[in-house]
Length: 529
Image (cartoon, rainbow, N blue to C red):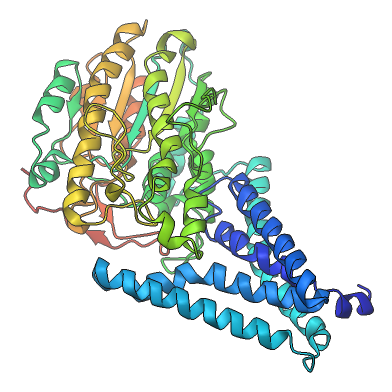
């Protein structure tokens, strides 16, 4: 780079303007699509250009104008973080006073610094090279994190993960499930894995004041087996689903260096390309996936990848004018006081609302519209937060149910009520959907309906819903304490003639920071109801 230009041109102002949006993207890169950063990025650059041009009219110097703009940007992008740090622990009335005082103090400080920069005795040009260097070093951090993620996706696509196993018995089991079946594919049943994110077991719902027996009785009348004491192997979605599709504990299924290994990257790969999916593909199954809104959980390379069509008009009240990413971005800025309880809190989740309904609408149709045999993976991001549904399926417009940065309610009572509202709506839809799938299928389908984990109560988070429709007598092989690692082992044995050994049904205290932990968690309650 030309040293003269580097020391002379104050391009640091544009780097500082895009740094917050790129940093937010880098910390959430596995949760969102990269395109969500485009509007915040462009608006930040436009705002920086506008400010630099405006200051240039008064200060008559590009470097001073860039420094003044940087001061304004620092205030604008830091305000939300500081305001929340100061106000999270106080009551609303005191919070308003604190925010007004913080605003006035910040504006006064910005004016003071800009006036100091504008003084004739200040040689602003002497700082350009140093500030440019600092800006470049800062921006490299999020850019490298994003680049590493993109590189990882490319590797995963080019080299789908092959999940090894540890012991001799497991090796023979893996070979059995991966081998092409000798039967006629036209006689294979369709297989559905329908995941209701965060759906709890009946006893947890009773503790929350909701009797779920009507829905569970409806399932049993349709031929489902409801596991009364089911538990998930892991309490986090990524770990739970990767383990389900690997048919094993993660410490055994995923290459790792031991329980202290913190590398969760292989889990994301195993969620997309895994032994379960491979086995269905080798048996001639069509793979069907749904858009979920989370890049790491979308089977975009499936034979049939169903995505929500954008057909809303400008007058459609459900048209999303802001994304959750953009909402968090704004909450971190000086507009924080104006967006926290505004209509934007709800608008950011309209896309989520539509996407859940789209999946629910499409599920019963594909029994007839997509020829079998097919393996359908539908991960419905509910009843998990945000609590955007009312029991009748209409949109919950009360932003108190999801106005925090993470989309959770503002108090524990609303947490329970919002969760139950989502449960009630899903129950009303799923009863009809499952009936239609069964009645529209030429060959009785295999259906697994489960929560990837339970409600947020720590001791009950492992207690998830697990219900199975295993036709032709398959339900007889099921048992009350089943965990997801054995779901597809049983399906393979019952419908594809393999002899896979079942794993012990245990729950493991692992998380994204310690994905390969082996410590077991005792069932809660110790005696299942």
